[in-house]
Amino acid sequence: MVSTNALPWSYIPGQLLARLPEGFLALLAIGFVLSARLITRLIRVCITEFRDCGGLAGLKAPGLLMANARGTLVVLAAAIAPIAFVIVTHATHYDGIRHLLFIIPMLALLAAGALLELASHLRRYPMTAALVLMLALAQLLWSGSMMLRLHPLEYVAFNALAGGTQNAAGRFELDYLGAAATEAIRMLERRLDNDPSGRFTRDRPRVYICLFGREWMADTLFRRHWNLVDLDEADFIIETARWPCIRHAKAVVIDEVRRVGVTFARVWRLQPCVGRQYVRSASDRIQKLARWKGRPTARHPLCRIQHHRIG
Image (cartoon, rainbow, N blue to C red; front, side, top):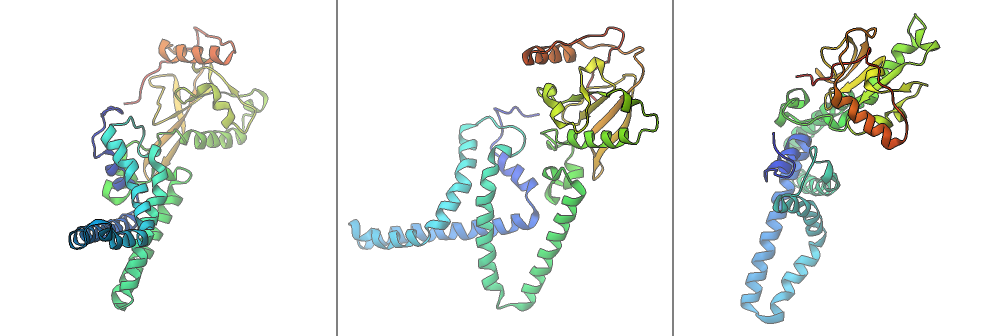
């Protein structure tokens, strides 16, 4: 476990290496090599011209070279400078690379430049070009199929360097936004819509969603006329892997949001209110949030839930 304000220098580069597609990383490597060659040439020209010509005359050739390469240099700086800033300042950083997502388009431009350069060289080698094209198509098909399998949680995808999404679970933060809660709500909607008992067509289901700090506004996710209630009043509880909130309760799992063998959220159906134990930390948090929102809450001592983390 690493503190968010004491991250190692390798955190952001490691996240990029684990999350970006393999083909994208290969093109990025080529792009950085080409950029390094350009910068080396620029430095060599500066030193040579300044030594031979001296003064302002020695800056003419380097200036022309820099002007011709300004696009590449600006994109390179826009991609590297934010990462360098985070590393040097030890800036607080949460949940993968979500605070640095704006550098992805810059990295894509570098990769595109490398692709154009690679294509110009491969024209002279048809067999090699055909092999590279086949690899590229295989990469696109694999990435596309993985996106379909993860939908609507595409952002949890990890590449083969990290062992894929299935093997990244437990080593990386996957669904750090709790997006699987929305999918769990859709599953519960379909279940109750087809409930033969018809109970919840007469009585609105009471639902609690474990989203730390956002429980009070979770009803905006509902597409049905449901009641968002406190933890100790719910008929159903929806928890995510990021914020688990129930264990050893009189409850059963009725649905799970699973992708590629990883569980991202669970839907719990609570049994009749007998023998449940109340845990103060969870209800106190709801009470505070409810008071902040300006609405009263009720506690039922005979209908309480034991609140623990699933380990």
